[in-house]
Length: 172
Image (cartoon, rainbow, N blue to C red; front, top):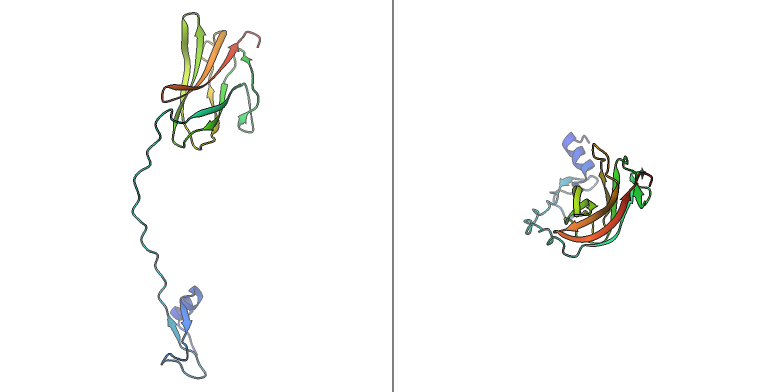
């Protein structure tokens, strides 16, 4: 008995079955192959409404904020109270206790001058998971970090949700 390539392919793909004795094509001493249509998946349901990012600041809670001077294995490797004016970069790391994916955060480094806060630098990040942790690298200004007291701030929707102060000293 010679099988055509189409029948062999049909057997190998598993879409052929052996005819049963109740089938009129069944003959004693041999088998008749019949193809069976493969089930077709139902079309995908129409997508629902697009997820809307939560209201800024809503439900974001910071568990910890730190200042690091170096990385190890792609993560902040220390938690320092001060850095030198030539430190580059300074890493502000954070760990959220609560937050919704898609929530925008703003990480700011503020210089605490006698006249008030002066923004030294700021960067935006997006929360990926509810228990997000991450860091932002702030490069040294061209004329170094001015010596003095600084504040690292994590904001969501313009609200401060976490603050950590640190010093830039000639000798940290």
